[in-house]
Image 1 (cartoon, rainbow, N blue to C red):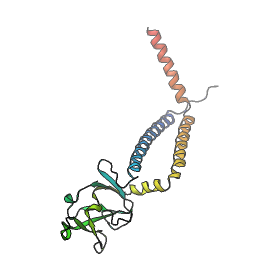
Image 2: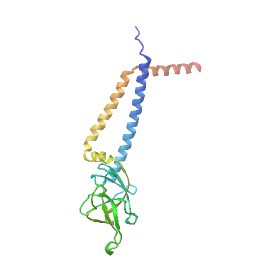
Image 3: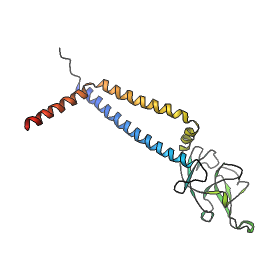
Image 4: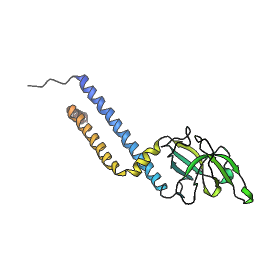
Length: 212
């Protein structure tokens, strides 16, 4: 006894779901690949504070001293810049102390050229959210450059990967398993789709043979 055919509306709905899932999976794979390449490049540039990528360095904002323009977790991209090209109101990144690997990103409030006849340019800086200027001057040798642009919150993701990289591999495995299960689910829901496509191909081949 022949089984009743499935409603055409159900088949169309399943087929549409398969197409949507296929598009989502493809977009995810491509985005994931781009992110892997991006973070690999950023990791390579992060190995030394003296290295740059196309004349840029990147830093993750850790404190709220530059809010509202820059918030903790933002990633700033700093173009290496000579002291002569830095102006008052520019936002710069600098090393405040020779005995520290920390870097600050503050706004220039004053530029002191040939400071005290030394021939060295110094800068006075201040965080936008701070009540007062920084208590120290920054000489030109400690300046990395000017902040050109920033990406909100992506620094949080990067720091998470740097500090907790051992979570990433299980996450990738879980995502791969999820997509495989979804693929298997759609095949079970519409098992006749592959058979129907195979039958159509065979019929087309027979018709072409008959015509010849």
